[in-house]
Amino acid sequence: MRLLFVGDVVGGVGRRTLAALLPGLRERHEPDFVVVNGENAAGGVGITSKIARQLLELGADAITLGNHAYRHREVYEYLDTEARIVRPANYPRASPGHGATVVANGSLRLGVVNLSGSLFVEAARSAFAEADAQLADLRGKADHVLVDMHAEATSEKVAMGWHLDGRATACLGTHTHVPTADARVLPGGTAYCTDVGMTGPRGGVIGVKRELALERFLTMTQVKFETSSEDPWLNGALVEAGPDGRATAITQILEPAEL
Image 1 (cartoon, rainbow, N blue to C red):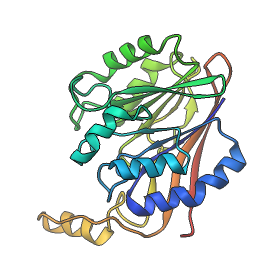
Image 2: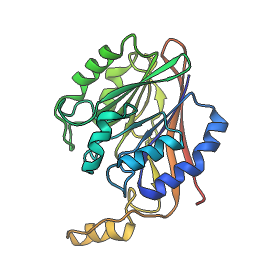
Image 3: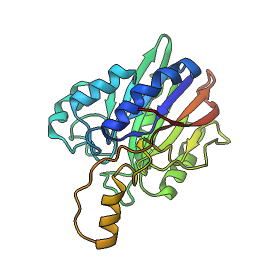
């Protein structure tokens, strides 16, 4: 099994980057599944039903979200009705959407779980207990399991990787938009990376126009952020796994786009 996971798509430039590069990545790597984090796909914050449909049409088999999942109210019903998009599973159970899904490609079945960290971002329950619950629920329903750990603290992500080692095919971090240089297969067979990075404008500050981010830091005043368009890249990871559900390799994808 080959899984291509694409890091946080940021705004329109991120969507155009995905559209420009995904066909070539598909041809080169022949993934069985493509999973995209779309948490910042709508103007740099959140997602809408229209944009979610666009990501699916571009070739995503599933979409994961994060702490901006509920930024746009119009997407709430879509989160309830479209099984291929998931928000953090450790959000309140009565909240819109669901935290896990199973997508199929022929006889292959991939379980996709979205979790939110607790440090510096809001979550209703511990991601660790929720991970255990989701894995138990997916037992017998999926051959491989991807966990998108959407969190701020690197310590929380690293801990989750060790917590899931040998029980999930991959535990890949999102949210901070900066790729970390620690992609590896853990001893138990779980592919891990603290943060796969973002798909969007590297020329800004984690997606924001750099002059606006600098103004905020320099003046400590409220500044309305806008998405940058400079130096777009696609960041992600390619995971390979055997029929036993254990990962055999992980390769970080760091690819510039010419838009």
